[in-house]
Image (cartoon, rainbow, N blue to C red; front, side, top):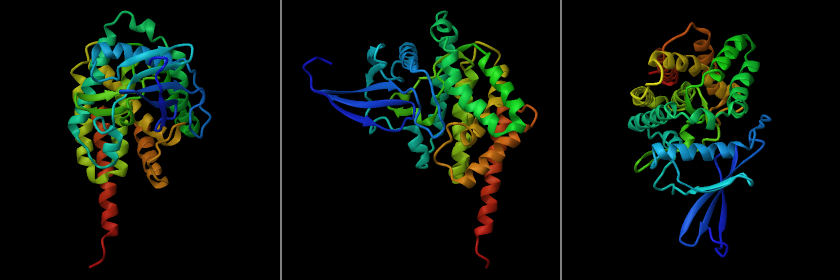
Length: 329
């Protein structure tokens, strides 16, 4: 931006952790982002604003691996805690979450997301500087371990030991650069494949967190889209398939074991943690809670068995509800 250029700033909505503006300049449009010290949720959730620097560093790294699948960074002001990036017009880059909530479930999009996340993890695991650049354990603790693990444990004291154990494993695993918020709300379906946004939680840690975090959102969507359970089931399988081909930094069974352990906890966290999903009704939250608690209480299962059990349970509940509603002949 040149000093004499006039800018038109429009606040953008959708996130809880940052302020985001669309900035219109003569002949071009960009986005400017700044982190908030207190996130915009009902629970008091504080986080270091240094995560703006972390996201900038993640975008720089990811741009070397998948340059068309992350926004291009245009400028950075560390002192102000702001950076400017490429604006991606929504008519060309629809949000994956919006597509899913509209019932537009494309399993191939899930495979492409798995492929992108797998490529990023594999590249970072081989990068000798990544562990140093993303040594952000304190940041990740404030943004993920506390609000998703500890808050959920306090709401479910009978499962607290199990959840605390999962928190310890996650926090103590350092293998690849984790995005930390691989959610459909942060994924645009662009002409060159999915585009990943909002890497404020960037951390050299446990890649299982990213895979479980995204997979969980597909499970949650079945609760509000029961007629699309088959497509969501296939999407979950293809997400895993797209990702698995890139696992070369550890035995795949070890990583998938941690994904399986995390998946029901993250589902429970989206109803009992600090950041509950907004689209579930109270009865639906109860359904998620019951499903997640039951899975979390069982001995270790495989990812495939957890996904299959979840989908079968949702199908069964939907069928039972349909029978109850059918009029008597």
